[in-house]
Length: 151
Image 1 (cartoon, rainbow, N blue to C red):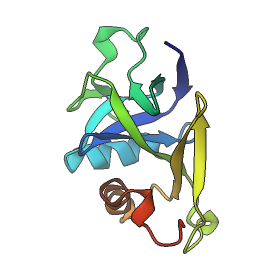
Image 2: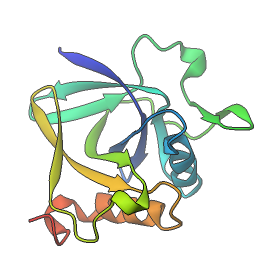
Image 3: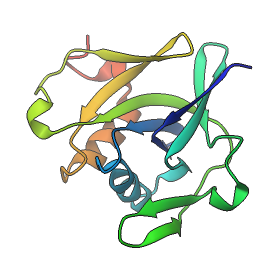
């Protein structure tokens, strides 16, 4: 099985994973914490492992990650804290790039991220926006085919 380990934070919403990408300090863990506070579960913080399952990308904590770190997320100012966690691989529904609000179009064209020869819908979100968690939950629930502007 081909796997790929990348920098990012993954959370599960309604049984589907979202991969939050961005440089260190970009707000990905903060956004993940807010999503978890609203009912999402952590898949992995800082590093995630992707693998193919037929035509679906699956995401999980890296196999090499010590068990003592699974289920922990870094909360700046608090340290590593335990949060609700999912231990099994989750299907990857969206890749989300942390972006400044000035870089985000009102009605963006569809974009994709590619890993292991498979494409996943890509969103750009301002992680500091109060509506960021609501937008991400809507994207997961609606799917990319039901979001206007992504045709």
